Image 1 (cartoon, rainbow, N blue to C red):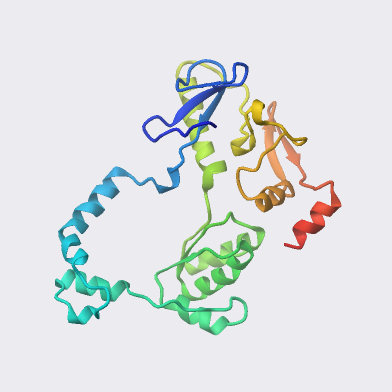
Image 2: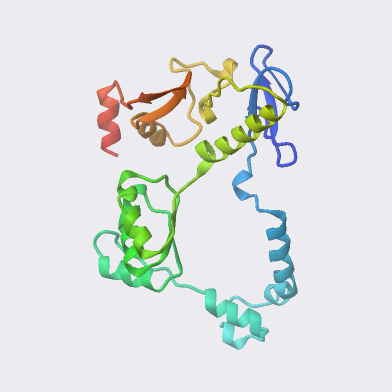
Length: 254
C-alpha cells in the first residue's frame, strides 16, 4: 500500500494490471483494508461515555502536584479514592520457578492479562484456573492451552486468546461481502484470502515474491502449522513443513 485507508472509508481497490489504487470498491482488483490505527478504535458510545464521566475531574487532576503525596492534596473524594484504588507497584515474578508467588498474585486479581511469550501462557492459565480468575492473552490458542479447556469450563472462568486480523476481521469482512452478494442473487464460487503477505507486483522483487508484514518468526512458525480448507466442495488438508532443515533448526532454537 502507498497510503492508509480510514475508518470513514475503510476500503480501496488495487488494480494490479494498471498498478493503480482507487477508493471505489467497484470493478476488478484486490479489495484492500489498510487502516493504520484500527487496533486503537473504540465504539463512539464507549468513547463518549468515558469522556462524559472523566471530564468533571480533569481540571483538578491537571492542577495536582505529582511530587506530593496524594493524601496531602485537596482532591475530591472521587479522584482521591480512584487514585488509591488504581495505584500499583510493579512486582517481578520468575514464571515457572516461583509458583507460590504467581498463585498469590493471581488470586488477588479480577482479571489477568498475559503479554508473555505464548509458551508461558499455560503456566499463567493454570494459576488462573486454580484461583478462578478470568484471563486474556495476546496469542492464538495453542495445543497446550487447548488441553486446559475442560479445566477452564469446570472452573467457570473465561479465557480469551487473540482473534486478530486473520482470521478474525478477515472472516467478518468476507462474510459481509458474501452476504451482500447473495442478497443481489449472486453466487460466490471461490474465496481466497492472502491477508497481509501479498506485496504489490511492482514491489515483489525477491526470489520468494514475499515481504514480511509481521513477525518473521511468526511467519515461519505459521508455515509449520497444519491447515484445512474447502476447495470445490471438498475439505483439503495441508501439512505444514519447512523444506530447509537449516530454517527448521533455527526456528526450533528460538
